[in-house]
Length: 245
Image (cartoon, rainbow, N blue to C red; front, top):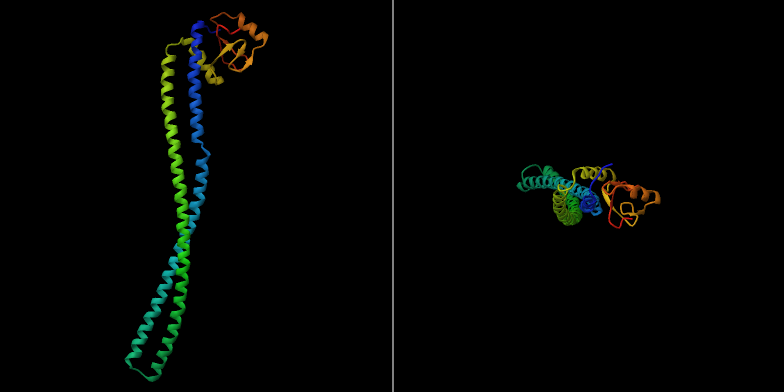
């Protein structure tokens, strides 16, 4: 059975307090890192960016359609201008001039139809661009909210990290002054049980929160003051204070 002076064993309670503080800080950090708002915003951003991509594609396709329509109109206008120039020159046979007039009339009808199509595309494009702008604003708003929450969490995590460093340094300095054999037992117990040591107070283990049975108490009473004893329920080291029994 491992041994350590009673006064030395009492120091384990302070060490356990530091370890409990480190555990609490680690739990807080994990909670912050797993903040559900981050995932919710990431999911919302994924959806919004997908919808924005769809809106941009619709605008791109409509702009391409508009360019084709504008090209069609320009080609018809060019033909009209060329035919009108030939007609205005007055050269050529009468039947040819009459044919030119007929072609020009047909081309003007074609131009009117194409310009109607162009106007419809322009109107549709305005709606699509407005939809894209609205979706872009949604994405921007989500990103702004994400950035704000991320900054808030990063700040809180940085504060925890600073406190963790401070407590870790204090723990290291304190542990260096403890009995080496006792510390080794404590460290192994802490790693295995999650709690290294707890006070035994008026027959109750503060490691498990339970009263020891008469048989367990009898075993503790039978142990020497410098014996290191363990909680039968939690498995941690039981530190016997003056009022332990």
